[in-house]
Length: 123
Image 1: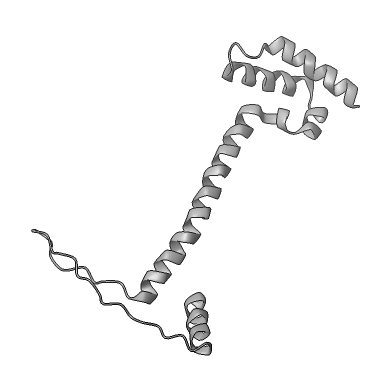
Image 2 (image 1 turned 90 degrees about the vertical axis):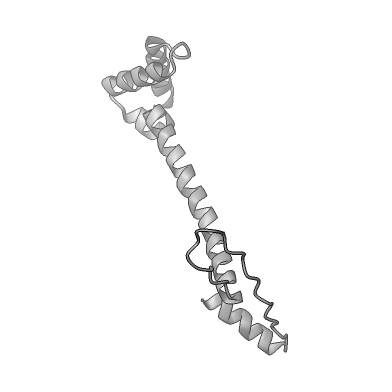
């Protein structure tokens, strides 16, 4: 990897000695076929770098999934430009979907009236 090579070059430039540590063997448990090969320093650094890159990638994927769920629940209500252009039928359908998902929190008829008032004020 470039990071490992650049680190090694940096150490060479500043005359920093890289000390290889003694490799510790894991005790072999009954039933295991072979001893695990211990990681070299470069393999260890590479694994840690990949783990560091994997964490944000997984977090972004998780958050993207949650945003898609929110978008599916609230639909056009999250996009004012689409809400203004939406037909009466689209508003009714989105209001029905929202009131079905949040029963007791939204009244479909009242939500449609509120959206109509909002569209009128924004035009």
